[in-house]
Image 1 (spheres, rainbow, N blue to C red):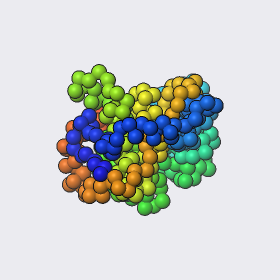
Image 2 (spheres, one colour):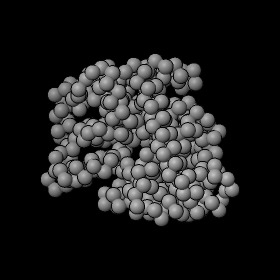
Image 3 (cartoon, helix red, strand yellow):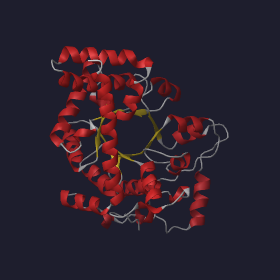
Image 4 (cartoon, helix red, strand yellow):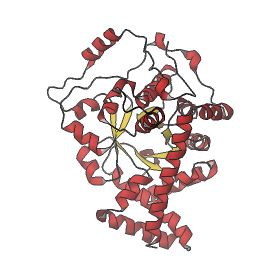
Length: 357
């Protein structure tokens, strides 16, 4: 039976289905390995998983040709600091100056406009979704998050990009999850980011989130620091185990929410999640795979019905969610840290834009 653990560090968890005979599993994986004689490792991974690129740089996206692309405040700030994007920044500034009267309101408009300008350009390159993040400083305000999502989509519509091309990214706090529920009921697709626990993923699925982004590398970082471990074997990586548990939980309970592993520290983490619905990958790892012809083995597949323990479905009310998070030190630490980090990058972008207003 597949078991799911809540409220403890991921380093102590066992991957669902770990009781299966190891030798038979390895034999099955070997038989299922994608043929690598003619294709690169990247091309073989694409046969198993939808590849999403984690960058705001247009040239890189054109080169790698992913299906979707994700952005966040850190990536937007980095891209906005490149000379070749000065024209986009200038357009956002001009738009804000015409749309608002005070510096404070102009700054908000300029920030949102710049995010949607980058996103709109990316929609011209990728055929699928582009994720655009709601300001992390609104992570504990459901109403403000919903309002911001509608404002971002209004700006997209101004430049001819429909809401069907955009995923609104929200931090997976209780308030963010409730904002997602409201937006999804309005036909607005959401990407719940900063997922570090099964508790967050379970609520996200229950409220109808289109997609969740579990952060593999950050879970690894926490466990290495907390337990003084220098490294983990790829199949024992706590972040990898986290995504596998979420993936199996969703499939066993027939949730349609897409699982998109994110925030990778090494190529082994990516390859261990071959078969996941989606993986959002940094350009350096995509380039590495494009230069390799090593095999790709599918590690995530639909669990057999007899391996699903349907009694493990988590309670998703607010009290249960907050208790699960309270008991999971890693998830609580990394969620707070992630929000602070994105908020810091938003403030850095604000400083850059304010100087130009």
